[in-house]
Image (tube, rainbow, N blue to C red; front, side, top):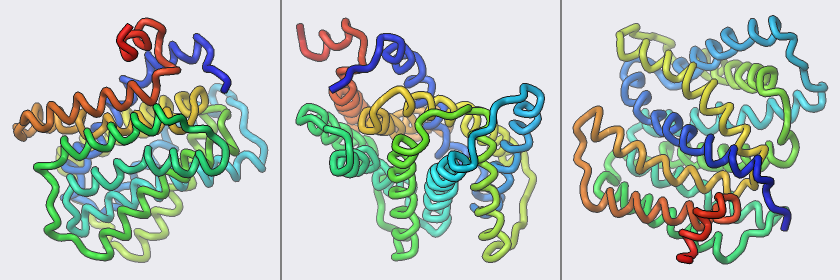
Length: 304
């Protein structure tokens, strides 16, 4: 099995914590923005704003555009990542699915990625399977006290499953067909594709009414800049440099990080179960990513 270079190890160690911190704010901005806009309307404005920010940069810097064939692959991956995943999650929550349960279901993504990756290309070791199971156990502990089935409907379940499979298939598709591309032009392609898809659904099924309150504006600004441009750029870099199973396992750290943020911002309780689950999740992610960690950290995980 080929090993990641020391340069890629350094990238993972540097970028992964930053990615997790930013990505974990996604559920926070949903709490701020969702009361003031319907899901597809919000996401259309968010994606369109990303394109409006990135396109002048691309033109000014004369960034290279991918071939038409690559454009197709990049667009499909983007539609799965952005439109399918975020659209599915936001619609499910809007329809009444509790955020804790939706987080747990989406938290199955690393396991699903490993299963599908092992069927097509990647070899997933027994140690990595153990780490993945520890990760999902830790996520379940973090969300245990927040999980509720109130408001659960077949339609909300269908949307959250769409979100789960979209981010999983998007991860594998991009890793297989377009692992490396110019992040500036590639982002324009992906977000433009997702914006068009969201606009179609917004025009067909939503009122498109927006209340431009301070929380709504803040949620939109944060969703455009740090999350859509910042976090997604880091995700693409991590996916390019690492195996899909290892990269996806880092998503396990999102619910614990979000729980800590909710404690700081909203005063939500931070219980011993949450802290214990966070520890178990971190151990699971370390086990999965042991081969891509610095030598001193690998020795610490092995206990020697």
